[in-house]
Image 1: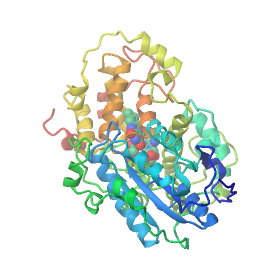
Image 2: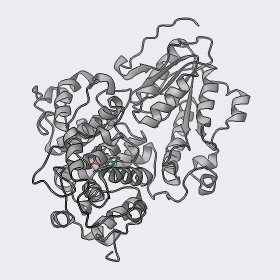
Image 3: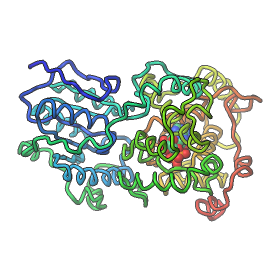
Image 4: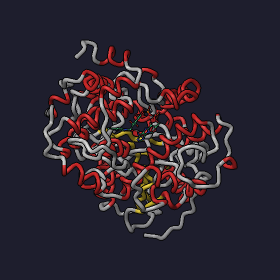
Length: 497
Ligand SMILES: Cc1cc2nc3c(=O)[nH]c(=O)nc-3n(C[C@H](O)[C@H](O)[C@H](O)COP(=O)(O)OP(=O)(O)OC[C@H]3O[C@@H](n4cnc5c(N)ncnc54)[C@H](O)[C@@H]3O)c2cc1C
């Protein structure tokens, strides 16, 4: 295979080769296998694919796949993703780029399709998403591919490979961000990599491939329930009333920016205030990019890099030189979101109990045999059958709407720890319920939040308590006193249960 040197604009720190193969100049197209950054804008993997296609003077083929093999694949998650796929198809059609949507009717067929397409391609580019299931699939496929295969990282403002250190606290990570971000902010992915590409249009997909792995039907792409019913996924987890896809993501973001951002510092902790962005599911499925959000936030704030305060102190406020509200939002969107990407990229055991800090494991072990006033099973938790009305309300919101307010999520997790027979069992319950029902589940943030309940990113707290030991404790009574919750309880636990 001929050697090829390809100059691209995408920073090399965002690009990782998954095999030793070279580009194949005899291939018909560059293949972009879209799995995580499910959008056609602000997408570094798509940008890299376009630039390779231009350099090699080949067509571009985008294949967006949806697996049915995840333990938590359900109507809820599939529908949200399919709504995004329909938009991606329209966007590619508008730009004259061939788009191939593939939804697994039989588990495991995605890999076969990608390997078959790769044999006709010059190179394969895919998304770098640091969840174990995603990296396992890419490595399984890359091993079978005879052309160069690259993963490209569009996840955060900080490229995940800008460091291989794992940060134990948000403070330490924030300090690192403050030192490093000025080098990376000038290189966001292109806002619209498909504009004016002038790439040769790909004639068609080989017949034997279309025949063996047919593209998703229009019915499926319209998230038709009868079409969904034929897929081997969990049909008991129902779709939610809000829409997936880039347009809905952008609308949600604009509403937050215009109407809610100014009050974010005061409102974000109050479930009744509806004061947060609601972006987490869109960020999780890649329907919106953190780079786009950051750019528009900075513009609205009249910000330029010159306003950054020079010193990397690790303090939450002041470094950006933006308004208090923008800085509070960025601390969640960048520090807290990306510390999770850092952990999942570099600590291979991020989902195991053993990954907790030593102080947390030791204090939880010391109190593992403490008497519990209430102990519930997974089924009782799942069906919101606890004695605590506030907890049941939170669980009901998760099951019905696929989301839960952040403050309630913290309380929800702390009580699962308190009412489980063992901390490891609490971890299993949290992972199962969060990932099964939350639209934004199976994300690095899921593991940050769940493990935070058990001490990750936190410090020891006194006084030492039963069950929790030195792990931070939360009570429903204090939460009810501190928060505006009347409407929340009326909506999600109306019978007073
Ligand atoms: C037990 C538990 C489980 C959680 N599971 C998930 C999950 O599965 N998926 C998920 O995205 N988040 C999870 N979180 C974090 C947080 O609750 C959600 O990110 C947030 O509630 C999403 O709402 P929003 O988009 O309106 O947030 P906003 O307040 O508008 O914040 C903007 C963005 O910043 C990020 N962010 C906000 N808060 C946090 C946080 N505490 N940690 C990490 N990132 C944050 C999210 O990407 C969010 O979309 C969990 C937290 C806990 C305590």
